[in-house]
Length: 65
Length: 256
Image (cartoon, rainbow over the protein chains, first blue to last red):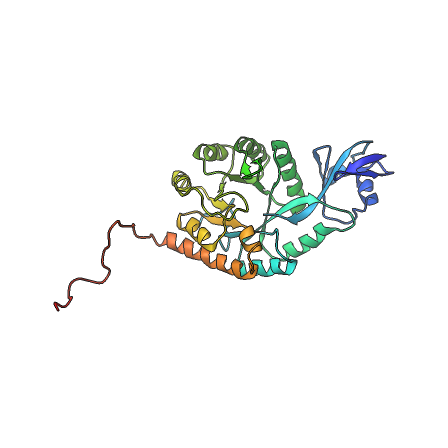
């Protein structure tokens, strides 16, 4: 299915968010996720299934003022 | 010294982590600054680069308190969601709450700020609201659950210093027991000294150090400036006079 990841179109084969993150290359990373504008905690990722057209944001610690 | 949600900092300087020429200069600047708190953000992660983990490994070794921000958020929803993400990733209840209302000045949307502060305070966050010097807004933020205020000195990254001395003095006087941090617009060490001399409890800055020609030296300058201003305030300065008053005694002067 096709979804948007950080504003870029990506194709994934797994619906479960935890697995999809690994498929997208996000393995063993310090990450926070939001799906269609809603925060998805680490605990919720296992129970969250992605669907066609979803908008996923994957954020990590960065410089800030 | 007032505490910030129970945290008593070793120094009253809080430093941002953005825009340094290199990671090593960031680390050296922090060491020279003696800063007690580092601000950080959340940004999009590319799965290939893993920049977040690299950055985090540097920051956690600084041994400072982490203050995540909601920089760049323009709506209450964006700010609240970002705060939720920051709480999980940084394992802290602290959040520097920014709800930006205007692009040219990056001035806070104080209506959205109050609304977001209420939501987050009720959820157990310890909110550091980036606000203006407006007394009414300050009062509403305190009533929303904030126990710290962060009034701006001048627009973010402008280096203009304290643009509204009268307004900041009024804010400080009106809420004498509230911990207040001057955030944004500081360009020179003397600006930070002035803020501390006025009785503010800390200064948060980033660009003034990161964009200096010599960030490490500037960080050290700010560490001294903060201490000088705080000591000046604590030592109860003299009242200014309109006319001269000789400091050398008149009595005993020779008649020549």
